[in-house]
Image: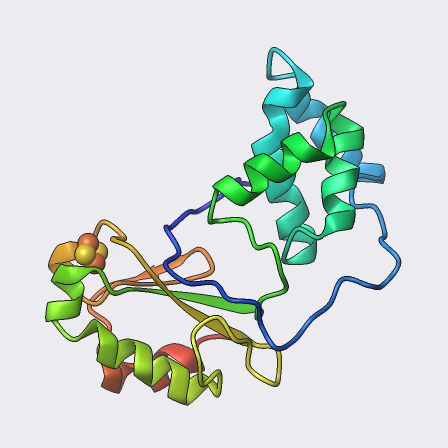
Length: 181
Ligand code: FES
């Protein structure tokens, strides 16, 4: 397992879907707990495994809920406030449910000048999301804008979960979405 692609989210508003009021079911049981313990053994302290632990939660559940914050705090022996501080610092962690396919489009100036806004609008239209940060009714897609993805010569770059795409145009968006299962 790898832990954590990242991008600087410009906007991640509370979506219209998903909630956090179901009884929390722990992630770190059985094989997942064993994996966490193996990870912890690589670090000088359990606290140092916080980032990969949060990533494991997100891989398992799609986001990091309040219950998950408490669980991570408990298994690593740190305070929930500390976990929350780290969670809220890094934009790659989702603090609310997102679509199965989390679409990040670079709209920083170089890509913007090459038409990134049109790409964003095409994603919003073809996914049915309608607005940035809102999950589509079928739960499949969430679209956000992000800062530079490090591919300024290949506007417009897009990340869909861990998949990185370059030179995406508005016309290509339907085919890109077709490849999302
Ligand atoms: S500005 Fe878009 S990838 Fe750098």
